[in-house]
Length: 249
Image (cartoon, rainbow, N blue to C red; front, side, top):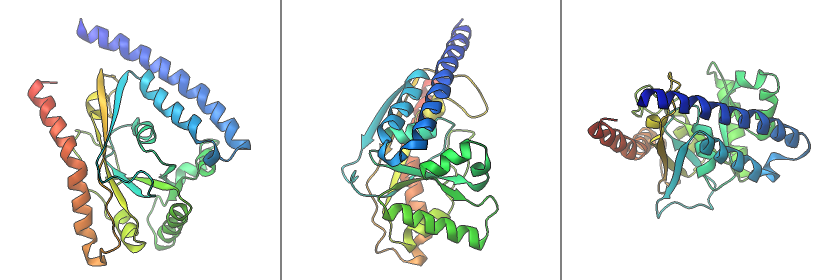
């Protein structure tokens, strides 16, 4: 009986959130044509938060005492499912943009929208010129007061655990002395798992950890920085998975 209820519930929630997504996306697209998205940030935030509400998830943000909400940073977090962009944008109290595969910018309408909104292209096939251009664009965005989000695992988890972080984004942070905020998305895997379609009742908690200053970190310490951030991000995620296992959920 519970499975039938979950199935019906998921179908209704997908329908509600899908209709909302389609309608509001068209409105945001129209606004982006005539208004700089940076000057029209609040509708995007309302849109993202409503996506989560309509998907049936409860939402909470926990900020560490050492998190500086006014400081432009690179936010680095775990990658769980397709709801991550909505979760991130609902949680971070700053103007924020992300990295997007270069090929996505060639998709009709969507690609123009991503470019208009200020996302940073990432080469599909890494090469020196493409990576240099990506780095320069990221630096320019941060210099203009735009914080960036990076999913350092490179792909979504299939078992809920945080996969090893890739080194690239940490090299950029070290090179330009850019502050990093480790960010943990907890409970999202229990809510919706990549490869499945069921939406389970649950709560997503986002942890914004202490801001890490990189101004004194040398090139030889980049790997240690990567591991440090991964450990911080992983800790509450792994604890949540252990708790879920003990409860049998």
